[in-house]
Length: 191
Length: 191
Image 1 (cartoon, each protein chain N blue to C red):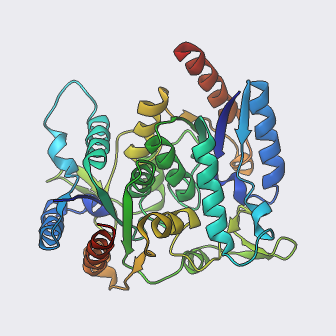
Image 2: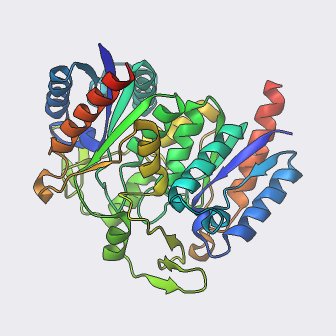
């Protein structure tokens, strides 16, 4: 049975363990074994080493064991995805494994930045800039272009965008289930 | 001569090219060849394909060519590093290459989140939570634990933190130069 690493800011929820169990059940229903980083389990387990370092090592080890990954790229504490999840996406791609992703908003990166920051148009370079004078990507992508294209190039499908209510932002698993279907299809085709 | 990939939100500056040239000069002075993603050069070069996809491919190719990487993890448009840079950090680690990083603030991730978000303490789980009820990491790290520990475990040194003035936030290269020195030392030791 293929193993899938389940990345996302879900681990920061109060009911992270319950969400993880649900995700693992959905994986089983699609014929995969889900690997979910239950960070909390590490907290009290080992002494003599920093907990954060142990979590890092456990997550990296889990990603190395996985056959592919599904990433929850829902914007987290700002305009972009959780940076821990984005790091794990890069790691998975670097290890040569397939990647699928979803986000629980249908909005573009550019539109989210525009909503939160005062932008000005730089007509000389034909780009929008924020208050720090930094160019704002405007390609219609869900997030930074490296993220969108990593998924498209190394998974074969664009990021699944699914609009949900604010209260369900980190709990809605419709996009996750779509990723499982896409993964099952892609893997049966390449088998 | 070892090749070093130069990642960071520097590419979004109006004078990205000048900053890139300066970084490459500093690399040469330390005995390295700097590879800097001059995104802008791609923009008008090729037709028939999306510019953002071409940028992705060029950056990934450049990272694969590099021997190691130096990452500018200065907070960008929020509390964390630029997600494009974080993706590239993960990719570099996944490819088994060494990683060094700097950030132009001495602040902790937790303190930055506390400055911008209303937090409440969850005494049952012994963690701080934001308005979305998501746990806030409080390990004294510069950013998400996956980022700090990727650098420490795969570079051998913690993220270089250098406090600078807000106007120099994306231009100050002191931390970058420290990374070059650390890389030169680490590589001479392992040679």
